Amino acid sequence: MSLALTELTLSHFRSHRRARIAGDGRPMAIYGPNGAGKTNILEAVSLFSPGRGLRRAAAGDMARRPERPGWKLTGLLQRSGRSYEIETWSEQGAARQLRIDGKAATQIDLGRLSRVVWLIPAMDRLWIEGAEGRRRFLDRMVMSFDPGHAEASLIYEKAMRERNRLLKDQVRDAHWYAALEAQLAEAGQRIHQARQAALTALVAAQADAETAFPAADLELVQTEGEMPATETDLRTALAESRGRDLQAGRTLVGPHRADLSAVYAAKAVAARDCSTGEQKALLVSLILANARALAARDGAPPVLLLDEVAAHLDAGRRAALYDEICALGAQAWMTGTGPELFAELGARARYLEVTENAGESHVEETEAP
View 1 (cartoon, rainbow, N blue to C red):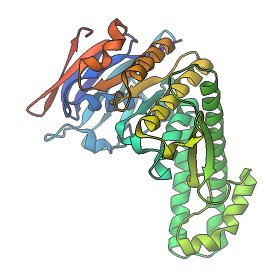
View 2 (cartoon, one colour):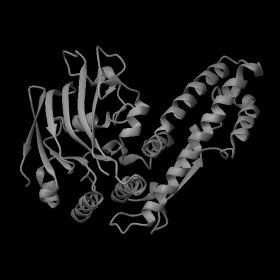
View 3 (tube, rainbow, N blue to C red):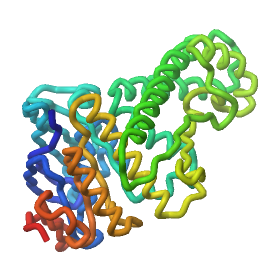
View 4 (cartoon, helix red, strand yellow):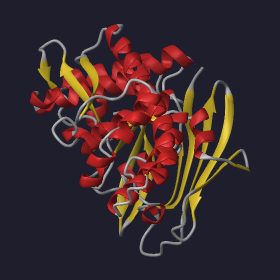
């Protein structure tokens, strides 16, 4: 089984008026100067999975400027020897729409077909900034294992917004809370269990691999207190916390209070206390573990998006990363400022040069360096 995007067309997307890219399952090495439009290609590929893409941008912000007529992406996804034509687009800033093989589809439908995970420079500070970014990083990996995680998260977030509105309005009638707390408890337990299952798979994938990247001891912790053990316990905890929540004006119990703890296993040092290079290596290690775990379960790794992946990696680790990607058989879309950053890949990859002229990006396939 394999998973790869073998054709990609961008129309009025970001800096690309129109671009057509062909792939064959090998890694894609994309190079060019800063601001040329390399990351925009990765963002386009990220939209072939559920969610708002690697920049978490609104659909209207993805349209090419200044005309902003709307945008469209079309791709041919190869999975297990079968091809799926996927189209996603937005018109005049409206929410993005999706078709699979010519039929209207949901993002959950897309998640059942496509697995895409990414590492971008904004994540380089993941271990030293707030818990929200770590939850988002973890949840992207969880969705690669369980597409239904996205639905549970949406249900939970909607119910929590409504409950928080009651809290801010100082509503004290228990009847207003009961139904919302039942939804929060059911969806919250689904979220927590999916996260725990994903962490178990990631830890196993790290332990079973010989790699140049450091393994991390991973744990899901709560920023305050403990996560209730069962759906019933969470529902009870929410009810008992109403008084405290009324004072705070927000919900203080549940999986939205979780954090991902990571420790550099070989050194017994918390990720937040590691060097910049070590922090980057731990992130790469988790992305590779995600890919190995999915390959072991499904027979194919996800599509990997690695933006400016060479930053903070020395030549030895860079070569090791490329070797692992190729050994996994993963289609990785990687960016860098020059072709020399991908020299260790040789003929194992396809190469794209991206240039910019008068605000418009141009893409050209080139030979291996």
